[in-house]
Length: 423
Image 1 (cartoon, rainbow, N blue to C red):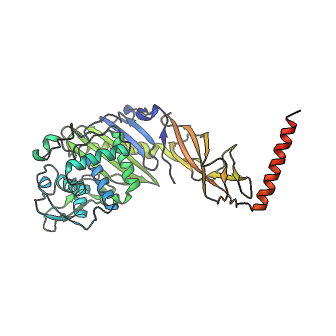
Image 2 (cartoon, one colour):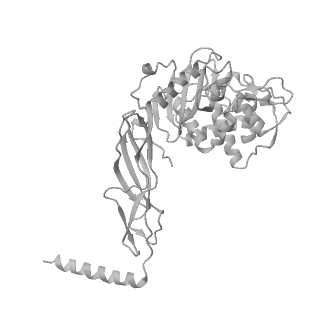
Image 3 (cartoon, rainbow, N blue to C red):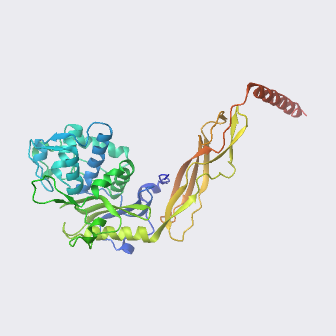
């Protein structure tokens, strides 16, 4: 079980890595590389600047539609009637007309694969009643997820001027912006909370309607499945199965990608890549990040599960057959480190759930937490990780007679000690 890596103190927001933009030769406004299992940042450049994310905005819509389905507000086979706002959308779309009827899943595929603005808006309205209300939900959710450099005005990422005039938000100011770090955080939560999203994002193409002459083609040219597709094979990358592209004139070319290799899944974000929408440069820049992560790092367990904590091997227990219980860590701490690096965590705090614990205690029960700090070898930032402590054995509740004898013994012991202290 992975634990979320937390940066300590002021270093958390804008920590600079030891790898510079020059060393990766990235041509971007901002970028970040993250381990999807823990949220550990392996590389970042200008990752906290709020920039136009274009259609990467749709990741939040995708997240919230999944949540609405989980909460029972929508279902995949539910039929939705298209409203005016969706029918008026420009840019990437599947040409929905007002009154058309499609299932939630059909609209979701159009959004996740073809980045369809009209399908996205219709799903947003189906969740919240209006796109403006949905944008407020997006902002509330962003705050809950720890996305501190994000502001949404709509579900699509379109600039305000490109929205249908009658449906531009009046209670939300500005334009949509999101930092590379926030985009990676959002991707982290999509993969963590709704991993089945990848079943949609990895689809190469599909027909939205049976009568359609052409298929909707996935804008993510990095999909590993494109390795045999003539136009895309130069961009296809091993293990890539998501997540979301973005392009507008103001945003330039953006991409949040994820790739899985040998049990390690990485999230890479590039924003503001210059060039045309169809030149594929954003995918070449993303490949540099993936190459760095997969080639230069390895997984290392710096704390084993079921390990004892030095000087805290046991915790006190009252009313038990034993006065103490052996405790061990519930999970390991596994991180990505530059190949050949060593990391040694230091115990900073042990906190029992109560002091003392109260019998009965069962093996495997959570009895406390232990907090470790260590120096990240990639960034030299101080990291803090808290792991649960669990009981290694059962401690049954003592019988009344044993408790009575123990109380008598404790009484005379304290009485004797009190007399000794008089002399």
